Image (cartoon, rainbow, N blue to C red):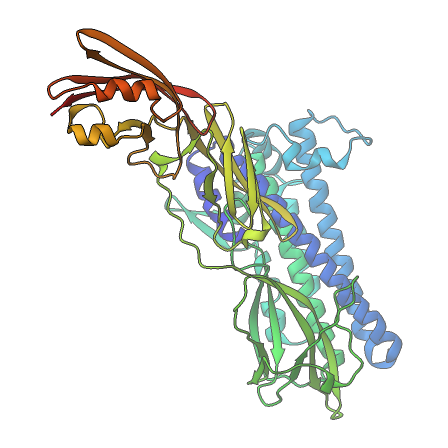
Length: 536
């Protein structure tokens, strides 16, 4: 993945340099440095195996151990040279050539360098002024090219098999040429001419990765010479071991790619353990394979497969022991350290962005989910609101502000990942409509309906929430016997005096219910309008 991004960025760099592209080189360089560290760590494991094998069988192992130590020395020497070359470039470009022995190593990291886009000085230092005749000498592309050639030649000299020797260090071929704009360019021009400092340093870090990769290949070949009699394999295959097959935007896809050797004629056996060492994660195994659970394991063509139905949501853990039968007929056990995977419910996410509204004074139901992440792992923060609930289901009661912001994050693979923010507008609940005897607004009413009405009510029409407004007060007025009679009512029910006014009304007269006030769930009192009724 890093290699593909690297090639794309080089192409983009040739067309246009922006801050974002330069920062992308910083990201790739950091990733390559992690790769180099991983290579070095894995190589140290092989060297430790060489040391142990030398102690166990010095007569057989010493000659291969000596070659492995030579490979280590060669790789360390050129790796150190390239690291010094990077520091030299940054010193010349970032610090005006001033060498300071007390300058922290962190200041030589690309992320702390400001002149990432400098084209001219890297070219002057590495290539010189004449592209057809690159300059030579210390800290030049030609000097690096010579050292790489010497490294490859000496590394191949350690290998006896001609086919393996030819294939070794294929990524360090400095004799190759490239076609650019219908012109053939050399390795040194392609890698260091007219490139920004960020790209030049990244190229050098990639060469370091190729060096460590070549070192790893060489010592693996050498080690096969000393343990070839232990196990016989007839198949080599590339195996990709991803940290996760689900990657959130902003996170990184990380996978180890290894070449695995196995025998299709000799199946291993594998079982799951129920106990693991809390510090190392290795399974606790007493050597009795019968104590392991093999019900979810199938074995075919020399490899074991663990498969289990994902029936329950959450983080699942597994691990165990895989055993391979040696030439002596005895089973030899290898740890499968504790692994984990996440089971999440399928999620349908529908976002009506024009309707992102919380109503003030109400408990607004909200469901939050992120595909691939269990809801119990989500961390939900909501501004300008109180919330209650769990597992992705919440009730939100907004405050006095005009908006609420919902932020979602979770810890994935030991790293806190933010999934973004969503803004909700905060609105007051709309006014209800007043009703009297089932009538509202200006309309007619039969005398029998009028006399049967107990009082005024407030109704919410076409509103999603089930809520009630409480009638606080209103006035009833009409012209009775030539005089205007007006009675005030507190609460929803008609007072006795108001009922007396109503009983005096005849067909053709009008009843006015005015100054109707109602209290909503947010505690505010609102004037919700008037009702005018003509008696028929």
